[in-house]
Amino acid sequence: MTAYPKLTPQERAEEYAKVQREYQSLKDQDLQLNMARGKPGKDQLDLSSGIFQQMLRPEDYLSDGIDVRNYGEMSGLPAAKRLFAEILGCKPQQVFVGGSASLQLMYDTIAKGYTHGLLHSPRPWCREETIKWLCPAPGYDRHFQITESFGFEMITIPMTESGPDMDAVEQAVQDPAVKGIWCVPKYSNPDGIIYSDETVRRMAALKPAAPDFVIMWDNAYCIHEFEGEYVEFPDILSLCEAAGNPDLVFEFASTSKVTLPGAGISCFACSEANLRHMEKLLSVQIISFDKVNQQRHVLYLRDKAHTLALMKRHAAILGPKFRAVLDALDREIAPLEIASWQRPKGGYFVSLNAMPGTAKRTLALCREAGVTMTGAGATFPYGRDPQDSNIRIAPSLPPVEELKQAIEILCVCLKLSALEELGV
Image 1 (tube, rainbow, N blue to C red):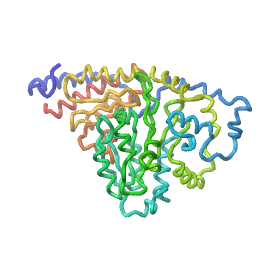
Image 2: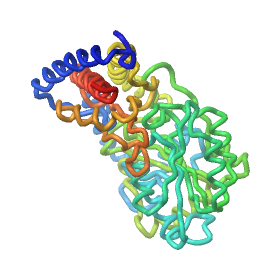
Image 3: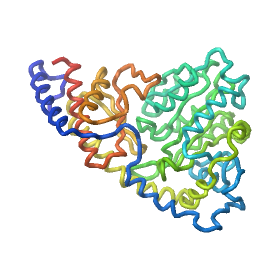
Image 4: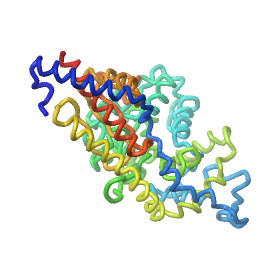
């Protein structure tokens, strides 16, 4: 194959006609394939079917002497706190265990800051003249939607191979209107980047002008390797404490892609002072989260080692799917010099950067051919990718054979849009 930018106008026209025929042939198959979100496939869900057999004995209703069926234990069962603390590497007394969605806990944290203020807020954020938020991008669209919904001015921070551009972060936090930053520190969404130790240390040592600045540390993929062995990761809470910033961070995690996304448990971890403040605010809203489900997960997952063994079984399913995507891109797109992509070893996405100006066109062509993907621009604040380049690929849901069909369509659409951008 010859790189597309090196083709003559005549060669580009001939190639375009050839790829158009391939595209029409794929459209004629009338496929309906979905790679829009990072949802586990049925075979992954089946791995945790045994969780439904938990708590069949009356003695399982008790956990540390607590009847899990009753009110109380606002911050979660002690056993569930211990489980998350072992996985995250923090202390059980720093953990608050919630319901099925860490996203709900993230929203609540921002909402409490907006309506009441966080621990060190001089006033609720709703009473500030201007509020701003740092958004490393490409990033997670649902994060951006939360801060946008509260009226934050979102500031894009470029992602590097070691995490957010920390020079830009350190400069931005000198503005007292900047109240926080979103972070997905391990297998970032969508790039699959693991923050370097230096990035984590610099993040923990930030000296923001705003006394209530908060790092929203969404450690969603903390144990989600699909290639190689489990990668240990620094405990951000202890690093913040060592840097003199004990209240700087809220860390979030869940079992959404460990057991059942619609029926898991979640947590945030923070300083004990932050936890007391949040528990006071949340206690007006809810008496306690679902402790029956917390107990079910404690009995099923047991401890970190047993949980990592389950994640190995997830990896055996996910690994071939990611390899199918990367192999196709290497084979069909790499020689053409029209896109680049990350090669993650964990997480749930492949981040592809198409030729600037072609992402929207590529995804529109995919839709016409029956492939649904995350919308162009979704990985940037306000849904606006300044380069119109980034495409988030979510390989987890389709079976491998359907995934191969979907990625074949994506490759053809990348070729068409690149040739159109180059001029045919």
